[in-house]
Structure formats: C-alpha cells, structure tokens
Length: 447
Image (cartoon, rainbow, N blue to C red):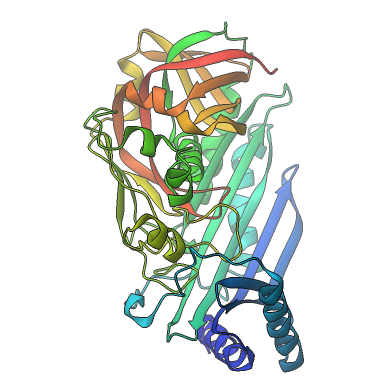
C-alpha cells in the first residue's frame, strides 16, 4: 500500500470518530532516511517511519485543534475529543467562513518519487563517499548529509473533501573546510536520487573552499553583486514568509499591499508560486485539501498577487489559491514552491559585466528587520569573492549585510538562464537562478 493510501485510511477512520458542526483531519505517513558525514567519514545513519494526525473541529464559529502521533483507535478518539473540547472553549471568530467543499478538490498529479528501497544505506554511503573524495583528495574535510523521504498526506473533511497524495525528495548538502578555516558549500534537491551528481557536488564545494583561502575583509559599503542560486533562494524564502501571504497583505505589512499594480521592478522579473510544475517537488493540494493554483506574485515587474487559504480568501473576497498551512498556525497561507522565471545570462556573463563588486555563494543566519520592505540582516558564507574588472579575484571574509530585498530587486541587472532547485527553511523548494543586482549594502565584518 502506498503512503498516501495509508494516510487516507487513517484520515477516514479519524473523521468517523470526530464530532462537531464541521471536522477536518490531516493525516501524514512518512518514511525517511538520512546519512550524515563529517571529517570525511560517515558517522550517522538514521531511518524512520512515522505517522501523525491533526484534527480540527468547528463548533459554530469556534475552532479547536489537537494532534497525535499515535494512530490506534483509542488515541485517535482521544485526539478528536480534545479538538472538540478546545473548540468549545475557543473564542468565536465571525470571520470563519466554513471548511472547503469538494468543488475545491484537486486533480491527481503524478510526480516521480524517490525509491527509498533502492536509495538504501549502501547507496547513500556511495553518494557520500563520492562527495567526500573531492575534499579528501585535496586535504580538505567534508561535512554534510545525503537524505531521502516519501510522505503520504491525506486531508478529509465533513464537507466531502478527500484529497491524498504522496510527495518526496532526495537531498544532499556539503560543506568543504580548509585547515585555514576557508569553506565552500554546495547543495542538491530532486525527486530522483539517481540524478544526484555526487562527485560534481563535492567538487563544487571543494573548489570554493580552496579558492577561499587567504580571504581578506571587505570594506563596508554598497557594491554590485552576483548572487548564486543558493543565495537567491534565501531571498525568495523571506519574500514568501514576509510578503506573499494573504495575512501579511491584509495587515499591510507586505510590500505587495503597499505597491500593488505599480511597475516596481524591471519588467524582466516575474516570480510565481507553482507547485504543479514538473521542475519542483511538492503536493498538488494544500493542508485543507484544496488544489494548489499557479499564482503570479510579481508579473513582469509588477506586484500582482498573493496566496490565500479558505479563511483569508473569504476575508479578502478573493479566490482560494490553495496555500493553507496546517491548522492552527500564526502565519496564514504561504507559498512553498516559489520560482523566478529564467533570464538569458550566464553567471560568467554577469560577473563579466561588473567592474568592482561582490560574488555571494549563499547567506547565513538571516533575520527580518522590517517586513514591509523585506529589510534583512545576515551574513555571507562559504564562498564570497571580490569581482574586479569582470572576474573573481580576492576571496573575502564573511561580511554582514543589511539590505531591503525590495530595494535591491529594483536594481535587477540580469537573471540567470539556468535555475537550480533549492530546499528552504520553510520546508518548501525554490527554483532559483543567479541574479545580478546593481547594489547590495554590506555593513560590517563577521570574521
């Protein structure tokens, strides 16, 4: 039986046990495996099977939620009763519309899944060994992970929604360290582990590490930058977190609400959320069981859209785009499959167009200072270089930045023609190209 079929059975069993004016059940069945390595050797193998159930009960306009990771009948019944008790003691919410109905159910989306039996501990060890070899042969040390997961998710509610699908991905990361402390980074995400380019991934990280030896401080100031896809994915992740959801739009803490319809960015910039493209990984429906829609968030430079769930769609009198997170949550709907439409430049062409600037492999420890302008502060890491006369010259020590992403994107100079699928902190995936920006504000050193 496939994971989503098991999850669907649990969801239907739970739905039959719950009592309320309306009931929603989210069931998850996951199988995952991870190999972790450090100091050029594998030190941990983990394989796990798990299941969880979350129940939302609606009484009038009051909602209560409860969850459990025990799926026997008695535990499911207790979970349902706790959700009902929570609803009875919750405050009324007159804005609550109703749970989604079956008209919002998704069409089936067939997506390749990682074969976890084939990508077993031996296969993951071979991939890790190929990654490690690239560092070990150069007297560097590699650390990272090789992992894969398959997750069956089912949503059922008392209004007739019955959505179920299995999603999964394989992922690898590597940090290559030089004895001097210089470092390089590379990552990979995909649906098919057989496509993992282990040796070239290890080579990318090792080359960046070697090239970063002898790094010098960067004088604070504003510089043109070329951001590699990993760095761009960080910016996309924070745009999704701060700006593209309906709650932030309603509360006017999103630049979309402040600049909707304006030609804010160059016309070359289009950002979409599209969980159904074959280039990404993810579910065809959200955590309310509603089909995910492709949403143009920035359309040819114009802030154009937001993502919604059933609650915020009703509150804003907009269509439900199918972007609910599991209930309850404090964020509202959120995009999990962001993508920047590709351009026509190569990274070498972007670097070649800059007289003096900075190349950034990725960012680290990024935090939000002002969500309305997506003002972020954080650090560069694992491969930062000075660009002089159109080529990479000196490696740079990690630098702190304080920069509005909205402001930076107004100075968009070029978009890479190749995109990489990058895993994000929020659990989604971004299709990110490299970007060349006219200005990025570096505010200090971090060593």
